[in-house]
Amino acid sequence: MYNSRLMLAIVLAFLVAQLNIYFAWTSHVGMTRSFYRTSSVRLLVLIEVNVVTKIQLSIPGVSSYFMNLAHGSRSFGPPSMLAMKLFIDTEVIVFTIAVFLISILLFRRMGSWISLLRAFEITSAAVLPLGFEIYFFDRGQFNIHASDIQMKLGLAWFTNADVLYITSFSLAITLLIEVLVHPKGSKISPSSPLTASASSARS
Image 1 (cartoon, rainbow, N blue to C red):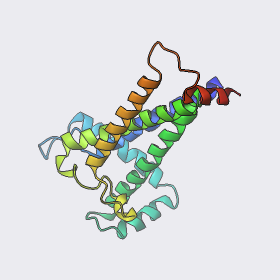
Image 2 (cartoon, helix red, strand yellow):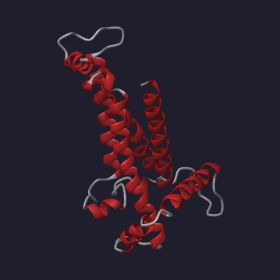
Image 3 (tube, helix red, strand yellow):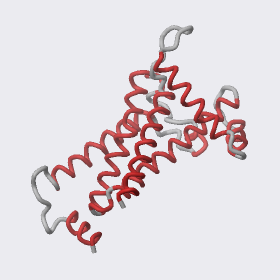
């Protein structure tokens, strides 16, 4: 049991780290004003993203699928670059869902209510940096769609600003609920839904 929880925690940490590398890449963190210079932070992000995506796009069928999506895209740019962006957008969505589900599994022994709260907290905290990074490093993209894949899904109305507002609100609300329901140093009331869910989980 301990080993499985440790593995879940390691996978969760990897997904959160990779998500934020993708966020730094898409929001141009570390970009300098000079066209001829690239900061060391930006260089490391570019290398990591290029290596990781090229390895995955070398899997048979994956590259052709996203190249077909790129050819049918309304975005401008080389098809290979568009395919890479669409792949990253898709992986960000998959990783975000995975972070939520793994968080539930990781805290399931504490009861369904606590595990859901922690899942929303962790997922919101993992995605929150994207909104801030877009705002501070790529302000022109703040009020437009958050990813190119949204154009394909008909969700172009959902912006980077929405990402910041929703994740901030979600994180604040879930932390407030947890503090109010289970303040530090106090016990959960036997009649609370958290206790009930924890009892059912043990039984």
